[in-house]
Image (cartoon, rainbow, N blue to C red; front, side, top):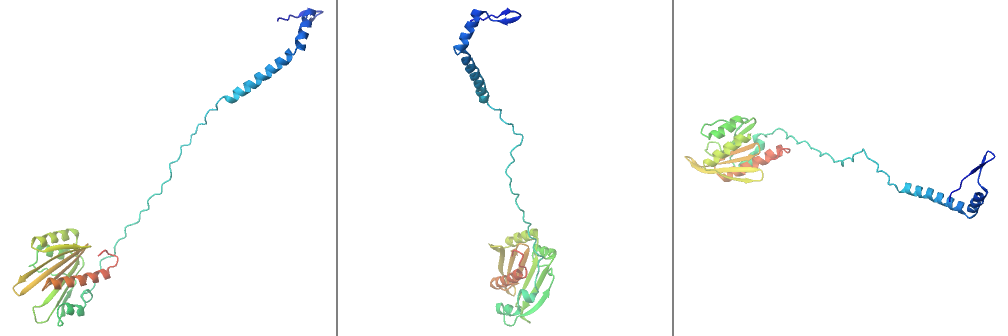
Length: 235
């Protein structure tokens, strides 16, 4: 329906017939329908605006990796310097008597190892390279009976060379715990003799006597005394 305004006396007005029609439209509730429609449009636009998905927030902070505890490193303890007790402590005289003879006495006690010249060259090398040593001799006066104990530090290279040389000359070897033992019994011009060698880390114990039973017993007793004197070393 088209409604056209007609100017009258300098004012705009609707023709009488059109005015009645417009009034009838107003009275028929059309204005209410227009208001409802407008309100609905406003409401719909608000709803649609609320349905627009929000843009995800961008994060500029990277997730930090879980903290890991740094392993604690304990310093390796340094062993105390090797201590070699005197001959009277390494093998007390009363123990020497019980192992060998009631007439046993101390015949020698030195802090160096004599180079005899009739030993294996590897024995002389180990003796000459030792930085600390004890050379102890027990025996029965005015007889050929006696035994000798050598205790010294030894390098890994000298220990390996000496063990190889001993095995090559007929010594038998065995290991128990930290101790490697090489021993041999042989006949000499004056009777039977025996040698026992203990290698324990950087420690060398060499016993020369009349039987392996004696030399092993003496070596065990001497090793016990060295262990007692060196509680921080793994002998």
